[in-house]
Length: 206
Image (cartoon, rainbow, N blue to C red; front, side, top):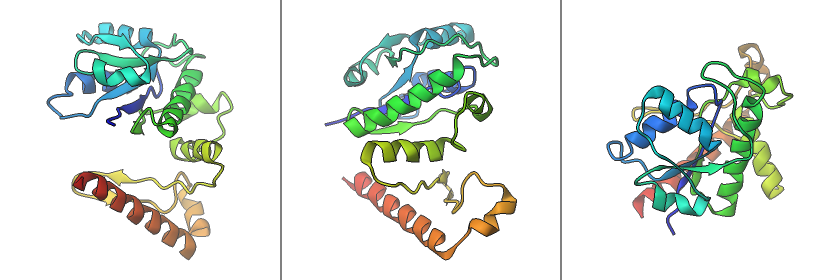
């Protein structure tokens, strides 16, 4: 069964909504797979109007995203309403960003989404509300552990068509890297990267 991608909102006052709107507009040109955004639909509609973009927004449930994607940007509405304006994060920013990430993870584990794609977050905004993780990567690991009961070792890949790079350590000050770097950590990161690369190739070859 074909499933869409779940796209997170990111910082609602940031560039995430702009990227999402532009991606949907260029979906055919870029051969993008169907996706839906987890967000306040009114926030997206306001941003499209502000940018002068003709992007219809359609509120759907996750299982309705595939049918809607050809003619409208599917948005799964979250209860967190966004009042932040572009470039001006406010008290609605962090709850909306976090709720979007949590729902995307839940949709993947429930089989409603094939995978998730994250828009940029504003860490400083999240930290002011007590967000305890260094970044997206560690937070996704924690949500995975909550969903499965198994410890997760998060590995991040920086990818381009020419080069893929997997840092062994993530979100650490440079002065701490030497203390944290071990042979086991290098082997674990390498094994995870190789395993996931093989899985991706297997999917592509089908």
